[in-house]
Image 1 (cartoon, helix red, strand yellow):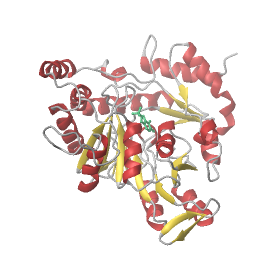
Image 2 (cartoon, helix red, strand yellow; image 1 turned 45 degrees about the vertical axis):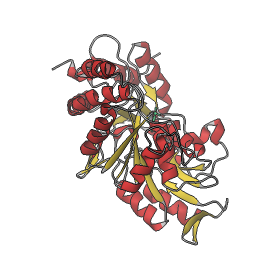
Image 3 (cartoon, rainbow, N blue to C red; image 1 turned 90 degrees about the horizontal axis):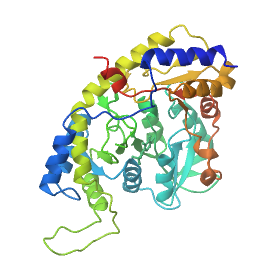
Image 4 (cartoon, rainbow, N blue to C red; image 1 turned 180 degrees about the vertical axis):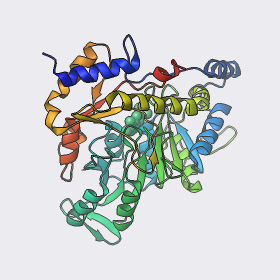
Length: 390
Ligand SMILES: *Cc1c(COP(=O)(O)O)cnc(C)c1O
């Protein structure tokens, strides 16, 4: 039998999305996509160079306020390269949230380093700076200016907070932990294009940050990502490394490093330019969608709808409810009742420290993330659910 909670959630979602099925998040192509793609194909510059890549990078920098943006093939590759540029080397440890998409942990592993898992905050769903500070006070020591894990003897090099579902993490608290423990902060801003804290955009707080333009993100290039930084030397290095470290020359192929073939093709950047033009309207629509969910869930007991943390503005990438601990056992009924009705909902990712490749990785006490894992549910969140109404 379906519980009344599951039935209430199903009914609230169906009231928001109207008749018929609803996916979790699908892209909307309502602008210059076809025109720019045609222009790109007509030019024959569909691949490694072209004006759309330059334009996309310039527009990303202008929009986010980062001094430099380097477009790459996807957000995972962006993270891998950003971590290398942040000084992460084989044998290091990197602090990452256990509640994240697998890319955050994998990027660390691609560098030959080990993810060291951190707990979440109930409020932001992101890394908890207070708990992390306490953990490091016990588990780490500063030796020769480096933060060293007392137990493993490895250097903890960097800290990679992630703005979960678009909600800005407690970035000030984390910057202060990074300062006090000599850690380089790299933001995984894959989910937070359009989110701000005060007057600063997500991805402009760390030494480097990364974005994703996968098909399910706020704007898409099909597949794509970007590295953001205010440091010109790092930006140049990012471009060089992601374009096979080829030394510029009219005909010679000389490579001064082991680089990567990670550049974003021009055809994907063309799509990105058209999508970026619509970002403000996507953000408006997603905020209106949030307001309607808020009204629909108002007064419903047993859950809360996740709202942007105070002092921040969220892009509301994925609308999210968090069940109260007392009804966590009903989560699967909620998932079944909604999905059975064609309303796609899903739980948060399986926590990283429970995944086979990371079972042996170092970690702090992860009780909040473990509790959230049982209670978080993402709701249909596409911008066009709202755009269709206006
Ligand atoms: C989407 C995402 C990425 C990058 O994903 P790609 O599919 O490689 O672009 C990284 N981290 C998080 C948290 C993400 O949600």
